[in-house]
Image (cartoon, rainbow, N blue to C red; front, side, top):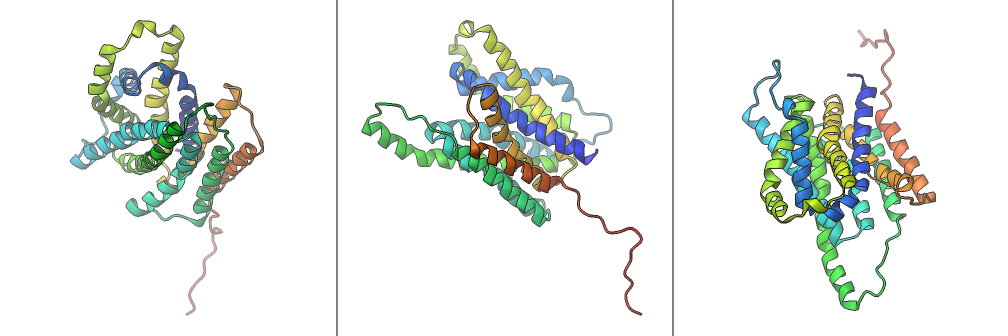
Length: 315
């Protein structure tokens, strides 16, 4: 695959993630978190039933591959969602954005530790640009403080903030592990089958809680527009983003691919401006510039040695 196509797949994947995160706010207000996850995995699974079958040219999964598929789903789908959603609820949006800015660096470190990838200085510089860009986006957001909050409520919020921040750090590690394990899996399975298998495990893991919540939920009260939004969310989160990520990751080092996670909060901010009517200030513009610089640094081809030039050792 052409490297430019691989870059485009990674950038589009993370841009879609940021978009559906921003646009799923109305869904979270209607559906309980675990019920929403169960519906997402179920709809995605029905769309990918034909991807579960082993292709003719693909070797049978080893025990290690099966374990990696489970870990990819448990960490990247199940545990990441729990840490992120509950972490934000206990902490703040600003804290979440700043902490999640560490994803590119975490991917680079884990790929160095577990995949033995050599990280070029230019990629480290790209990671730094990504981290700084996302931090600027996060710090430029204005937090809304509820008027009339009592001192007791403020104390409780302060006491739970450390737990929320800890859960957000867990989400960073889960997302970094998702990128590293995904790189290992692309050497044994095709992107479509990886996407279908980790979605199936996600459905299995969340089914007990999903069924319990579905039994008590009034589905008839959900507006038709929300069902269409749920369909988009399920297909984007379970099918499109995962397939695009695995397709691009198959042809690039995990550390280089990790830089493209910068597109997640950047695209979320863009959706906020274009769809939700938020304003774009100087800090956000600077963040976009840094993010673009990081992607350019990570994707520029290395200079090849001049053809036909050879230095012979002295005789």
